[in-house]
Amino acid sequence: MMKKYIILIGILVILCNFLTNAQKKKTVIARGSAISHDLTPEQTKAKAIEDAKRNALNKAGVSETVSFTDFSYKFDDNEKFSEIFQAISSIETGGEIVVDEIISEQKSFNEFDNMVVDVEIKATVYRHKKRADPAFLFTVSDIDEVYNHEDLLQFKITTTKDSYLKIFNITEEETTLLYPYKDPDNPQYNDDINRLFKANETTQLPVHPAYSEGYFLEVETPGKSREFTILMFVLTKQNIPFIEKPSFGNVMKWIYSIPPDERVTGQEGFVIKKGE
Image 1 (cartoon, one colour):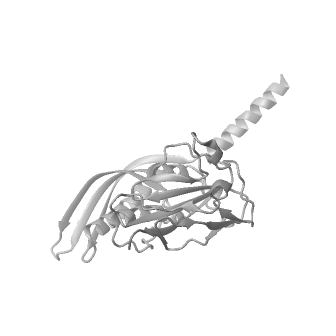
Image 2: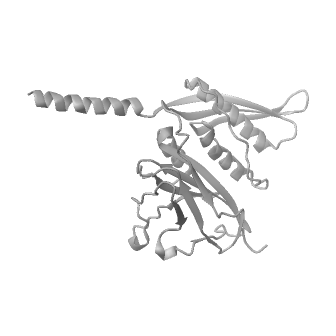
Image 3: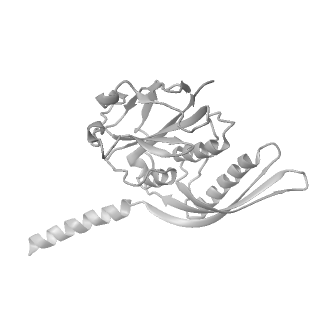
């Protein structure tokens, strides 16, 4: 009987630890506003959404200071993609939030002829009990800013701790899981989903011998001469599977469900040009 009690207590301790460290999320509705004299309507809207995000975080009880980085890749001719990158860049600055829906959007002009954009959003806020591990870092090298249609992409990655890697390929049209690659119909081309990237060792990707010369790059949208791409790198201390249908929102939710001290993320952006 005593042995049964000890086992039960052990199970309860494990359960309590899991519940304590579990990521808490809350759905909130918040408003945001932005005023601009020289920005485009979409850029002003992006600023209003940033303001709504901050308000949503405060509303959900996230007390720490949150900053949202400005868009750094100069894709000025593609505002839609600028918005995508802006959302991604918030990951590394503590913005643990996913905008599920823009409920309303209003544009007007004030007495000084400045554009005013007001938005109301529905968002999921993830609250974490732990902060990021400052010793958990990684570097990516050999990725250029511009590639030609049908070029091959190779790059190297080095991490400071033993970890498991996921790479998401994010374009204007879709989001896919680039690594580990999985094709149910052709398993011979699948990457090893359990591969451990060892601390302080540099690994060249792709790792699969079938396409070791590089990932094939192409402009996939008919009629377009260029395509903007972001590679989202996510390294985790535990091998946490991504099992949802790949989409930008699902990727964000998967990342935010992982405790900050168990993950590190980053991104590399480039342009693929065709016939220019």
